[in-house]
Image (tube, rainbow over the protein chains, first blue to last red):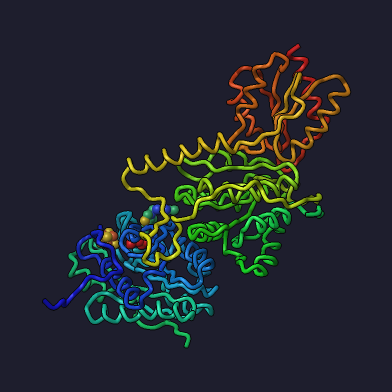
Length: 245
Length: 355
Ligand SMILES: Cc1ncc(C[n+]2csc(CCOP(=O)(O)OP(=O)(O)O)c2C)c(N)n1
Ligand code: SF4
């Protein structure tokens, strides 16, 4: 019988703990496929965050380190400086990367660390139950912005990709989305490029992945995709923010 | 090798390099700045990496990542910087990663001051970060000893898969003394088969982690770690017992303070008071047995802990002496250094009380 689909070797057989319809699962698969296709699984060392993806070390089929909240880029730096020929990546949420770990990501970019960063922006703190994140949209209701994010009280969402694109050390910054098949296919290409850059020693690459959190947004997985498209993309425009040839 | 005259901080850095440390991640803070400066100059020459991190938080997490690959790695800091490293140290202990941390203690709390102090004893010896863990802590008194324990620290860290701290103070870091670099006694160290180096298909993949969501698994992991701590207590406790035979008063002091206490012992001898010194070289594990032994002697009337703090190690002395003899304390804090006269006066008062 002809095999028409095979699960990527980049993922273990462990069942995901993610909520139904959560795009963390899609993002995992894209990262894993990219590594498998590039033949780097055996050289890869991933760094898992604190957030819903905390168990990423059980899913990615390569050596893994679990970092403390926000520090994955520093941990990845430590790994990469010892093993420059290995493939080192971090997988981080927006609380992890854009709030508690802002310093670590900016300085990893500034140093031009030759690592790949997968940044999952779902506008909320998923794991701790849907608090306001640095990426929460103005007016968006979360458990800690019960009346909607009020910029006078809680400031404005941070556009990490645009910010990081201003940094000289960054080689490739792109924002992609997982809300439909077309965009998922494109996200895969971008993620793969972010790994290729590392193989070619181009330096710091970060892919911001617009993602859903149906559970904490309080909508169905399908409506979450629509909400992402309608509300997130206008605030977080897709596209390449920086690419060094 | 011939002796060379070196500043404490530089000697510690050189000892680390001679122990095979090729990676250093740090952030500037007085009074330890000569360590990163030395590493920045020397490590690139031997194919290693020095990196000035964006903060102590980042530095200790770079140490975590590098240690997770099996490399010998070090960081150094002081007071406020060591406070920032506590999260990372807890994760390092929780993931059983070997590394060496140098703490050239300055006075606190807060920004405190940059003069020498011993007021970070609690932080270093009693945890500092969250959770059930200890780390091996050496408290050298001379630059030679700082060199010796730094070299040994890398072996001990690897052997027991634990962070090890070198607890110095501003005085030790800044002064100069002749030193010699001798390799420590050879240990049989296991391959780091747990390291994340890429799994190259011939071994199961490795995971560096401190998260155990099932309580019974976390308890088992911690209990196993504590079994290792028991072996460390048995095998690695270091103490110097000086002039304690027939001593009436036994001073407990470590690091720089112990050097001041030695001159007190001489001065006391001249006026007919016999004073001994128990000097912990490891403050964790604490040399309880030495204190127990002398607490049981009739000649010993009391113990006196002397520290550059308001009294921190004195609590461990009290635990070890366990009520068998009175335990007194004297010390200076805030970057002030106790004088021999202050200590001798305290000894006289104690003796008057017991007689
Ligand atoms: C130092 C520290 N502070 C707080 C927490 C609690 N915490 C766990 S996950 C998390 C937020 C994660 O949110 P995000 O990074 O957006 O990832 P998501 O769960 O949405 O995927 C927080 C605050 C922690 N583990 N450590
Ligand atoms: S809480 Fe949100 S981000 Fe976390 S697994 Fe569930 S849907 Fe995904």
